[in-house]
Length: 155
Image (tube, rainbow, N blue to C red; front, side):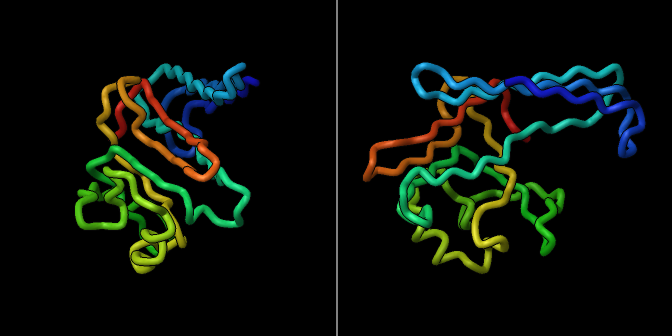
């Protein structure tokens, strides 16, 4: 499936005409592939992303999942869940997921840091494009996982 959008010059205050396409594929190996393409005729800001929320089990929660995000920094959010613009080191925070962490333990122990009841942050990864997955979500009981790879570093 392919979706496209044209943001005309001046839309929401941004310069340039911006043409965006996103294509979704489901492969024969049960892989979901998402490809973003964007072209502009002027220097402008763009940050394309996918806000997928996956529960890999039959349980009502994701507490039994293990999450690893290879990111040294993240962007904190304010009380309205809007990024503050600050770039903060993950070390010593709930966002330190550089090694695999059980989500149930993190969510319970860090309620004060996770304003939305979970993670709704931009993680800044510097994994070389397509070298390693920069995110790994695993549900061990049914042996299923999600691996995210990117052709670009973030932040």
